[in-house]
Amino acid sequence: MRSATPDPQSAAAAGPGAGAAASRLRVTVRESPDSDPTTWMLSCDPPGGDHPDPAAACAALAAADRPFDPVPPGTMCAQIYSGPQTATVHGTWQGRPVHATYSRVDACETARWAALAPLFRTPR
Image (cartoon, rainbow, N blue to C red; front, side, top):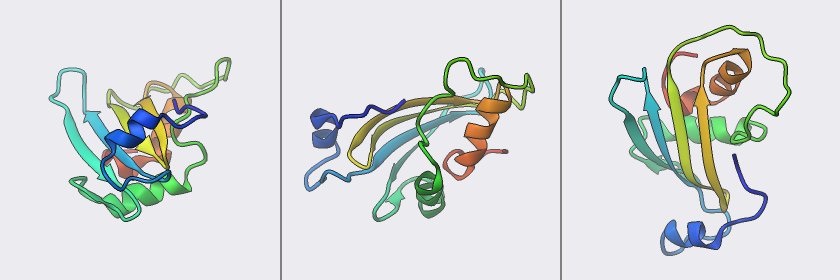
């Protein structure tokens, strides 16, 4: 979930020269609860880091409406399980702190995952 106000400590942690629009994220993906995690660092503006396709990941984030917001409480979601994959994203996006989790346990969560599929590099 993202905060409405930037966290000065997160912006400072992004490194020297990181301005108000700094975007640096740590993306951790698990294919299943028993699998080893895969972790990438991603920066945007310009795309970089050790993510396998930083340009596509940054484009997916930029195109998504509120990419780090959770499914709102009370939302009706079809109970369609799409897989055991999970992901976490931590860091700073456009100068704001990010702490978000993703899964594919129902239709709403799967839609969130699909919107950012290039970020996770796993099946939609």
